[in-house]
Amino acid sequence: LGQHVPIELDFQLGFGGGRIAVDNRQKTGHARIFAAGDAVRGPDSVIWAMADGQRTALGVHASISGETVAPPDWTRTDYDRSTALRGGIVKAARRKVPHIPIARRRSSFAEVEARYREKDAIAEASRCLQCGICCECGACVAACGEARAIDHAGTAATLTLPLLAAGRTDAAEPVAAGVGHLLFDCSAPDAAAVLDRLRDDAHTALQARRRTITGVPGVHVYLCTCNDSVHHRDIVEPLAAEVRTLPGVVDATIINAACQQGGGETLAAGLIAGEHGRILLAACLCCPLEILCGSCTHQRARAKGFLFAREGIPLHLVETLNLRDEVLNQGGLDRDAALRLARRSLASGVARALSGVAVATNTATAAGDVTERLLPGDSMPARRDDRPSPLPLPGCAITPADIDAELCRGCGTCVRNCPQEAIDLQPRLSGIPVARVAPALCTLCGRCLAVCPTGAPNAPFAGHRQIRESLLAGFPGERP
Amino acid sequence: MAPRIVIFSCQWAPHYALQSLYRRGRRGEGDGVRVLTACVGRIGEDVVLEAFRLGTAGVAVLSCLPGHCRHGLDQERFHARVTTLRAIIETLGIPADRLLVGAFHPHEGEQLAECLEKFVTGIGTAAGVER
Image 1 (cartoon, chains in turn green, purple):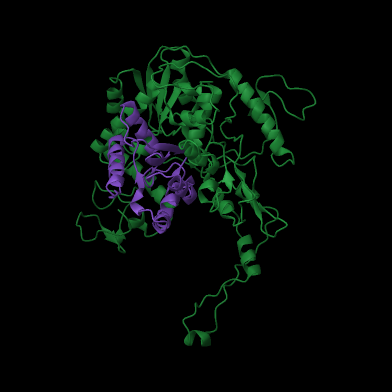
Image 2: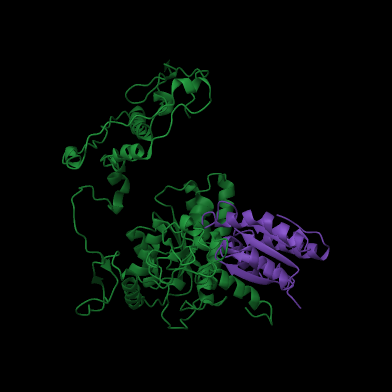
């Protein structure tokens, strides 16, 4: 492994030029040993490493089975690369990097290569054709697989995005309640106000889609294998068998990907059919809330979207456990340690699902935002509060962070750390700028709260004010 | 009478660990106040000092382990403040071991309880613990 070639080991590999010699199927001098990557071709790009890997796989397959499989042809025939280079492309030579004079080099240790001047740097950067964005190999289409999320035809299209919206503020006529189809310009001056309205409408529509589940008490555990990509894949089956024996567990099912539409349908099916009252999803999801924080990945957002928005499953019937990150993808754990850890995590998750105590639900309840207040011991808590929840749809944030202008000293730390680029600095009369949050971009991740040296940002149920108020609540007689 | 200790806990791993204790009816923090926050990265020096100002004997800040923070590097941001924080409270005449900074996995409820018990006991005997 690696770039070092083990010449000292005599496996009859065959060497040439200080590297391992291979044939066109990556086979070495030894009939059962194949080599690929930098040890064969020297330091090179990952593109060639992947190509080597593909040839090696074909070679190994042929060696074991005797069957020769032709490599897939990724060559595109319906795409004219030259069209991408037409128009607006000016041929320009590479700018020469200035060097310091030889006379100066003799008497100093200064760097020989000087820097580009600004205009040369801009000119050199302008030569980039952005070709690295996509090399048109088509491999992503195959890798995406059953999701078929990639359209590689490359034809321009205008998309009308479906939104769960029942109306819009500037519509000439009210849109009928239900699923609307709206085009929305996020750059419009009143984008924030329109987004707020859309979110309100979407929330109303979402609530209307919420199913009433009348399942029997009991938890169905779903173990997601993340497209079989987790490190400890081999412990999932024994885990499922053990989980089935836990008190209160109706069944345990292994699913391939909770973040695919089929995964969401599988998760919802048993609840809808009334076969069980709750599910524990042991996948990569940290919380069952309809918000996206700084830790939410695209997959987590998709899983939430399919389960809560598309299938209409109430939040309080779903407990989540991030088994992928906590155990299954912990390559540093040996199998037994991973199994032990997973057992404990799953037992804890099942207990939470049975008792109805969920971390995120508690957090939201503390903020008065959640419609179901769950009590330990309630196997099927009733809906107790019909107030509309301000929790946003996946992908949206309804109550952004705000900045206390009195405390902000305009250092820009929050601007540099905001992963959504939702914060900018606005000038003030004093000359010291003040940070401002763009509501349409803020996802309420709270990163600004963590990095601000003065505690200026605040966010619902996550800010300094809430922390301080919680602290003072423990000291009778103290007032904020 | 002020609560004996104040526990600032992030809502992820240590909260799970504390919950597992509660389910078993065990409470390791004595007569403490627990403040739940999204991430300990949001715990500033000011609220820790505020807790001491209010008269608590000790402050425990519980977080996920390094690399397990759901909010990227936010947990490490608090840990970067600990040295300064300890220096400040010592300057104020409070022993630095009155501040406990701990990191736990969700399943480590027993370890967490043990750690808190040692902390509470240590406050009584002026001998702090660190994990």
